[in-house]
Image (cartoon, rainbow, N blue to C red; front, side, top):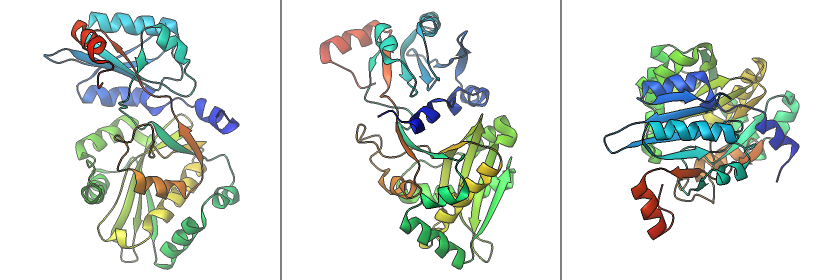
Length: 309
């Protein structure tokens, strides 16, 4: 259902359309292109044929899709995956030969926090248990530190805590080299916010990137010892206040569970419940779309129905 809050979200240009993200893709071996209207396209070539992805452009019109078509055909791409933003006209995609996919590459649902609200209103939106956890963390002497353009030492410490959390939850941990590259590309728009106990030991930390008027939570983690406390609640709350003070208008908590894609989000229940304690606007992006170029994939798709791409 479209609401004024959802219209606000649709006004932001996604991080994955930023120049910094294009640079990050290139560091991973992708080629990047932009249409005349600025839509970012990533292409990855291999011995078996290339693939392409277009992730959350504000909107793509017919002329953009024609340019993407030309780019993909020239590069002999097997298929292109298109993940729409809220403002995308889906009929334009379907008219250009795209059909829906059951396999997203990025979080298909998220929660946006409106940082234009004043502090009392932001606090009011937090659940009772969330407020209790914040106050408990304060009683236990939590110390919050924010690092803009964090140093390698800070990133190493962050990745250690995030790695412990990933191992506990069965997720892939953030790779130090990737996080360092993001800091290099986003500069002063990169942040680590950490929570330490009264003795100064790191309990939890989050990594954020800013672009335009929005900031994105990308990685986070709580150390093994930190899971015994409520450090993450005060950490996230203080992140709200810090980014609000920097002038950002919204914070994307980057991901929550989505019943449309139970396999992709099957282990997301715990952190989704955590994020829901902080209020915000639930956002469900349109399902991904795909267009096939490979004659073999087209044949398999006709024979077996929609292939798992």
